[in-house]
Length: 396
Ligand SMILES: Cc1cc2nc3c(=O)[nH]c(=O)nc-3n(C[C@H](O)[C@H](O)[C@H](O)COP(=O)(O)OP(=O)(O)OC[C@H]3O[C@@H](n4cnc5c(N)ncnc54)[C@H](O)[C@@H]3O)c2cc1C
Image 1 (cartoon, rainbow, N blue to C red):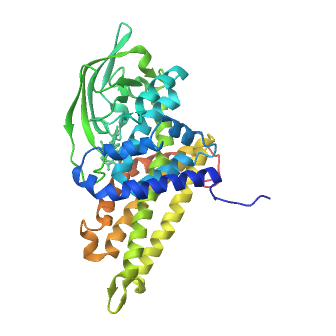
Image 2 (image 1 turned 60 degrees about the vertical axis):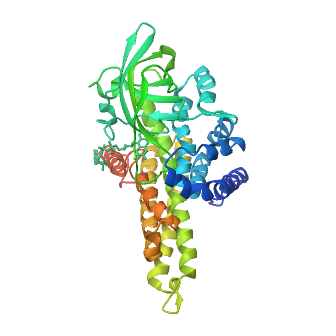
């Protein structure tokens, strides 16, 4: 019988080291500045493009890992650096995943290079799903695509769109028939902010993730060629598959952020003295850190399990994705909150990164399907399995 192992292979370790070094050298020192500026961190994205970390070739390499773990590793390391800047870099991946997973070879060859641009002329892509009246209940969307000869004509509003003010490609969810639910859902590619009828109508201020932007986009009679539809009439299943793929990555983001918060709390409490000794020597403090380590370890292994199951198209892909997203992002919130606690009043000051990390962690429980929605998905899967009589108990 072979040895059980969750150890990363040589290629994965190399990528992990490379991304970690970029996060440490380039992202971390810039995190406070971009959190303050609340703008797209172009110089950092350009630097990532220059070393090949942001670009189509590296993305293809990450996707190609036959174990499915590399995208998670990259997400973890970048979010260890800083969540806001990391999202600005990784936001393109969401739009690209839709094209990769559902596009024809010709669409993939044409559109994906456009999403990244070149190191000298960097481009971004955005993934436009959420609407003012359709967040969790995504199939109630109202952005409508109407056929007009060979083209589609789009009208509607998208909100909370990461990188929406700076992206050149929008992978956009529309309906061909409002009120028709999942059956009417389609994915369309929109070419750039310069397309007539596309406008940025709002730029939100937010609690955290301020090294990336979110905006409201309006589509007013935007003409889109018929060839820009990806996945044909399978828009809704394609979207669900994208969510399954993306959720372990968000889970990994939580692991990276939690690790950064734990490391900071550990270092600080070993130094900070009260009552004549380092505060780490008080069990009330050191046990908080020990609990962080336990949660993080369990979280990371759940990310790997989910990513591997999705990559091999296993039967538990949906449930493991939902479990990982929920557990890891709840872990990030809990760990960041306890890290602030470990620093006492100092943790509440912007002088220490745990203040920013706690603000950043919150959104992980909200985007890519709220953690309530993950529990809805999971509880349905569990109940269906028992009803089908396919298992004795609930989970296996
Ligand atoms: C920083 C940030 C970046 C984002 N980036 C993007 C992006 O790039 N592209 C994009 O399309 N969207 C993006 N979003 C939007 C995000 O995905 C949505 O906010 C999220 O899906 C929740 O939708 P909602 O805000 O409309 O909440 P609602 O759906 O209004 O939910 C409100 C509350 O009700 C709960 N709830 C709703 N339905 C149920 C149910 N059936 N059972 C139990 N509880 C329920 C929710 O969990 C939540 O607590 C982003 C959001 C943020 C904050």
